[in-house]
Length: 167
Image (cartoon, rainbow, N blue to C red; front, top):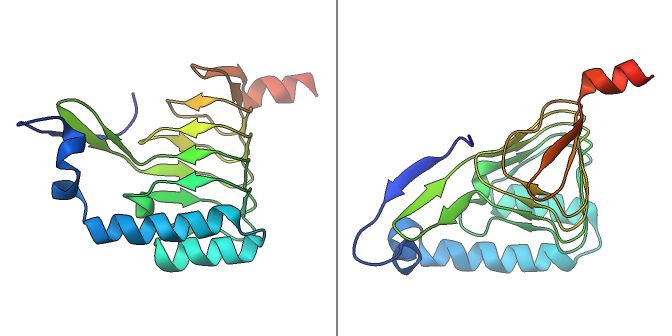
């Protein structure tokens, strides 16, 4: 089970109550910064934007490919370790707005992780150091250190121990 905080709502769906949960101006600022970063080809500029304006914990030499979209409402809940690559058009969510509740959860991506293109990472997930996430994966639970995962829903293809046994 993902590690999320659950907040029940009444009087309509949780998304209709969005600005009771997060400031409108914060969402505007995050949206503008993320849209600029999605299209800039300069990795150091992206990392600076994410660290400075979104308060994300971004390690050294992290590579966010074009069109990566971090959470627009709670980006400060995302951390990415050193030397990690996040593939084209990946979405990293730290929130989910549901019919009768919303959920928040930290997303922790380890060091030397490779995340393939068009992946979606849900809130409350930890991806261990050295893990590989194949393209178009829905990461809905934790990924063990050194594992390779893929699919929708995500499945473990092999673990660090299995990889070492093959070598």
